[in-house]
Image 1 (cartoon, one colour):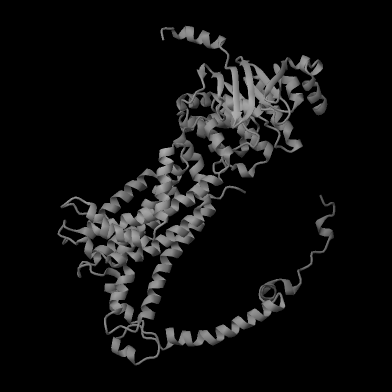
Image 2: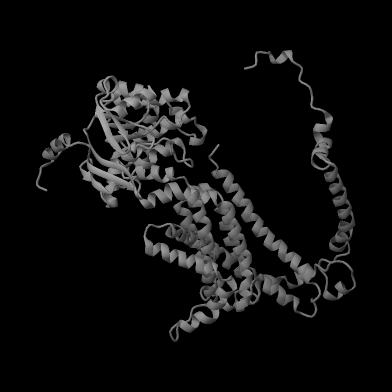
Length: 256
Length: 363
């Protein structure tokens, strides 16, 4: 490596945060993802929708290697995902993930849930990690719950904690895997509001969701997947007003 | 939402038959005709059994007499215990040196009690334990500071039982956890090794392991090399208990939802961190009840070391009873021994319940 630090930073600005080339994935014999090509630039917000079983969750889970792909390339933050566990950990450190079922750590308090990553992975001093955690809890409007355990919070509150937990790692990219699907209707808005705030601040986000209102208001690109393929992607305006494919039209007519 | 003002409505007392002693009796002992029948039957049974038992144990009994005096009474001869207590507790430990195992036991039990409080689980506690273990070892073994050396063959009675079971549990637990993790490993070699180990050990009785450690194992050692018999028994107990703990812990690991592993992974935690910080704390908590079951039986199973001629507290009691003076009073001696075992077992299980309560965070 002979490039100077200045060159590297300029390179990073140009290089996409996620680049997926001709990626395929199988579950046993089942071809779950087929020829996926996707480039995500830093600061972009992408919403992926599609019927259940279309592979959209699997796709974003490939990006932080919760699922392994079998063919093609996935490059995240300049590092290619291979079996190399060190690289995988490096990528996961920079990529936040929010799950459908929150997956908070039930044996730890909210504050401990938030500081765990920074303390053990980023090696942030405890005191500093706690200060940052409280800031993010404040941001998701839940600072007063810091000493409670996840089991004492409502679903919406838990999901906001989960978002804050990812943010504490100061990620370059956030993945959302159906973040509102497990929530009671009255709690969906509080989570979406947090996500909209996040988008406004310029966070790079890839969101699997059926919340089309959210897609319309914040997405740079909406992507429709079906049978493990990316069928169509477009700016939200065009995507919703003028879908190109029959399958997209059918899907939109069913959910809107 | 109720719109009625609370003061407007009369708060009635529940019917007399529902609360208080009468209510309790009614709902617990006489709630159905067969329960009533059972209650009456049990009361009759107790009335028939208890008086003679109390008479035997407390009224006609002798507490500190000679063996001759015992022959004259119909009651219990508790005297068998104080008269033989030295041998029951200390066995063959040289007389005049009993203060050494006593102090060692006090240190051990004291340290265990001190360690009950989770807020004390810090690095300094480990140091304290290390110091105490060395002191205990010196006390038991002697040979320095003017204490005559005591060969491990002379370690017996309660100190031996406590030592074998305490170190058995403390070493078997982490070893069992490692085996459980190994059995779930992605690396085929480690996984196979752990499966073979666990299944082989669980496939044989502890007695045969003890027997092998005592009789067969020395045959494989090179000439001149000997490993202490107590140590060999100790290792056999550890190996045996660990295999059972491994399977219980594996059950706990399987009970942790996949989402917990994924959440830990997606934070960038490595395997060791995610096991140590996320998975094991939850898994081990779930399996506290069965783990304690295994530890309790490990504690009681130490009495099997008698098969390789180690004199644990059960064996020393038997030896004491083989004295013609005291034969015939085994009931009293074994009741005493049962109480002794019970105290330790109960302490363990009540602590485990306390721990479960403290660790409960799912509201």
